[in-house]
Length: 217
Ligand SMILES: [Zn+2]
Ligand SMILES: [Zn+2]
Ligand SMILES: [Zn+2]
Ligand SMILES: [Zn+2]
Image (cartoon, rainbow, N blue to C red):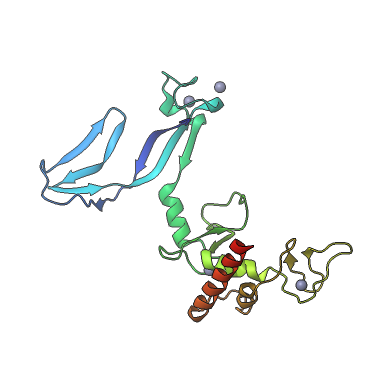
C-alpha cells in the first residue's frame, strides 16, 4: 500500500480517561517510553489510564514517495516542520460538538444526530473557532434538498430548455426529474423544521415504493 504519511509524534491530552482494561494491575506504576513513542496507557496506583491523542503530527514524505523511502530517509525526519501535517483530532471533534450548528435547523451535533452532511464537494477553509459551515444533520439535509426542488405542476424554464431553474418558483429541477410524493411531503415542513416523527413511516413507505419502481423499470 502506498502511503506517504507517518506519525511524527502525538501530543497527548493532559487529563486521562479510565481505561477499560480494568483495575488491580501489576506493576502498580508504569509509564512506557520507547525510542520515539510514549504509550498512551499509563498505570497509576494499580489502575490503568488512557491518554487519547490531542494532536497528531504527521510527517508527509514529499514528491508522493512512500513514508521514509524518499529524501527524508535516514534524516531527523520528525523535525521536518515543512513536511508536517497536523491533525487536530480532538479539537476538531470538540469544535464540531460545541460550535457547529446544522445549516437547516440550527441544532447541535450530538452522538446520535451528527451534523456532518455537506452539500458541497469542497468546503472553504474555515476559522477553527467559528464552527464548521455548510453542514447538516442527515435528515435535515434530506429536507433542505427537497425544499430546493421545483414541484410545480407545470414548470417554466428558459426558452428551449426542459430543466434547470424554474422561472415560476425559482427552485431547480434536474433533467427528467419528476417531483415525487416524498419531495412534496417534505416541502410541507416549514423552513428550518425537522421531520416530524409521525411523517417518518409515510416517507419510508414512499422511498420504498420509489426504490421498487426503479428496480422494475
Ligand atoms: Zn524535495
Ligand atoms: Zn521530511
Ligand atoms: Zn438539523
Ligand atoms: Zn417550479
